[in-house]
Image (tube, rainbow, N blue to C red):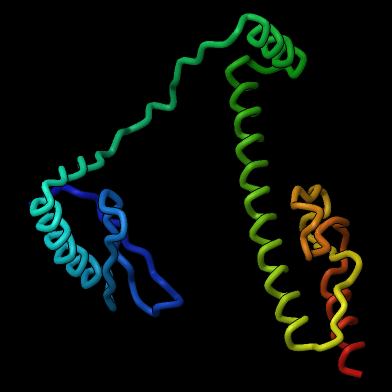
Length: 183
């Protein structure tokens, strides 16, 4: 018996559960239930192990759960330490709290950038579909999104999507263009 990790997710596209074993890239199995997907993954694992052994490939080490204490030791340049301590003092919080807030804010900014990128990809697909289905479709000069009006776009300026001026009226821009093309 091997002690490898098994991840199970539901796939809307496939209409079933997919089980993967992350230690073996490319190993996935399907099932109507989580249990079936796991059982199929275990069968696939046996096949992978057999091939690895036949080809004299060492088996990957099983991943183990490493609990995190919530503590870490961080070495900083003295100048950065002093600057952060001063900022914390101005904010009226401990240096620890200040650093946690800075890290959390940066983490959320990165997640927001990922979300914006996904939105841009979706819009690229929508505009491509519009252009393919509506012969004279012209993209609006700007596309606006109500829930992200405070963000700046970091997408490439050559993108075919007008994700440059965030505001409040995306649906109207698209709807008006479609209506103009249909007339």
